[in-house]
Length: 178
Image 1: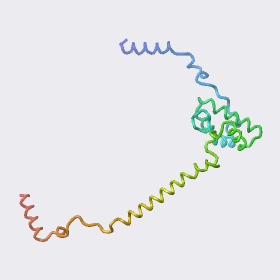
Image 2: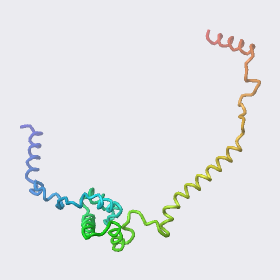
Image 3: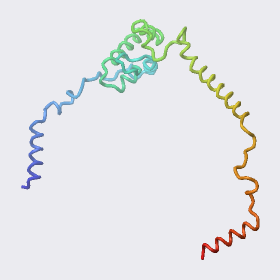
């Protein structure tokens, strides 16, 4: 047996010896999730969860956090709370209001367009309109101050060579070629 084969087999045997039996157990891979229920894929529940923010700090909505971040322990609890309220007969608007009362307005993905929050909806659009208007005025003024004709950088007396200039050029080129 060559040295390379020996060390390869020694490494493989060491890895097998150190292998932990928990790796073969699928339950050890993470917390088991509850099986999918009827409310987990309901369109009304999904649309409501898309408007509410998860409280784990990820800044995702509850539905996205619940279906993509399987390490989050907050979004399944919030989902279960939504399902409980929905099964009690509350409408999505009432459930949203319950969450706002419990967690504050920061639970909403978008603030309600009332009072000062209305500025968050209007100011960006107005700022774009004002900036576009100012830019249009500046460009229009700049257009008026530009000269309409551009002066040629070549003087008129050098613009067209005469026959004498062309014959002298041909003579000098023939001398250089020889």
